[in-house]
Image (tube, rainbow, N blue to C red; front, top):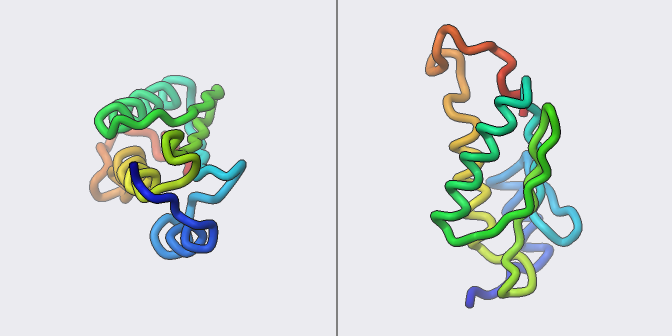
Length: 114
């Protein structure tokens, strides 16, 4: 079992590596705003795949135009480095490609509003 990350350490990791994430309810939290329900479902499927690959079980809240993600390691009773690693992978995957140069030409510009 991994060691828990203290709150000050968690805040430092968020500030340096995951600025769009925050601590909420003693969990790592991120909301992605999307253009539609279809995009919300695609983002949820991607997060679900990554979580299963990491043997992690996040809490996901799906709304018509958003997905909220809560990460914590239940076995450790709080945040561990596993949560931050998954958050980084989620950020990379859901936001890819992040710039207009790598985005498909026919994709709506506002398909994901993070």
